[in-house]
Image 1 (tube, rainbow, N blue to C red):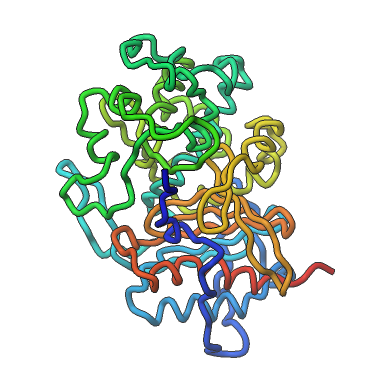
Image 2 (image 1 turned 30 degrees about the horizontal axis):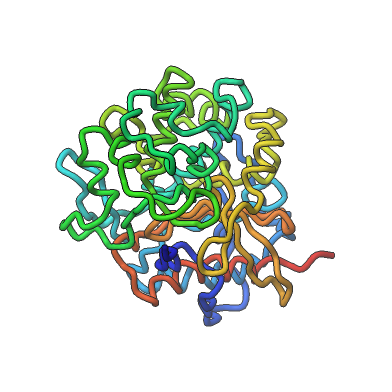
Length: 389
């Protein structure tokens, strides 16, 4: 079975940096300085600005703005536990509606909810960790069919070996086709799963193509299983459980998470404000703590963001978290990522005490230039971080 090969859209390290042409020597007063809001974020000030090279970030942001519709929608940077840079743009976005999504031109700001696509998966990982910490889910090593006795007719000697850990590491060994844009022909399993009367039956009914465990193969269907498992274990849909255990403790008051066939769309469907995306990153960076409150155990943060399996584009995977490497001042640094189609990303760089949140609108753009623009924003942020000392 071949690994899926289109993950450059998630920001692989093989992509070239987005080269920025200088527009001016110094940033104007207030450029990118985060606004003080009653949302729990400490923010930087112009006279306390040693954490970043603001001029470099402003040049990057002005270049993006000068493109007219660059499809980068927001760039936020947190360092040392403070929000140090915040910039919003205008661009084309997919807006959910009764009959599917529609494309509109949107002027984004701090209050605009944004579709974070597969960033949702990493948030679901946090919810699984909380459920395990509370004893609601016994172990990541539980056989998957122990959660789905109603699907016992799908059991086979090969499928009996699938455990929750294989769901979390995208290594179930089931056939899955997802590497196509959403063109309306439904020629991918994600679309077919959403049309099925029972998404979990659809996923577990797929043919076995490899033993579970050894090989990474990206499968959004795994998150239909995660969502149902959380609901069965906690007695509440994933979005309600996450609201109580993650969003409310983080002070995230404006959030949407759609449901499909009664279960939360854990593979996507989550809409957050960029400042709240950055909170998720800061939570992970701080070992599960936010403002002196332990929200997720440090043990789950450590194990879920540790390398479990080699993935694609020189990246690795934990429990629904991406792991990558990038250059900072000629030195390799490691990052943890929640990455979603179209350029949505939360990247955490523990070595630099850094969180970078980006939203974008490249949902159907699989071109090399789009991939370069998406990863280039993160690369440019790294170059704006002063070296240690």
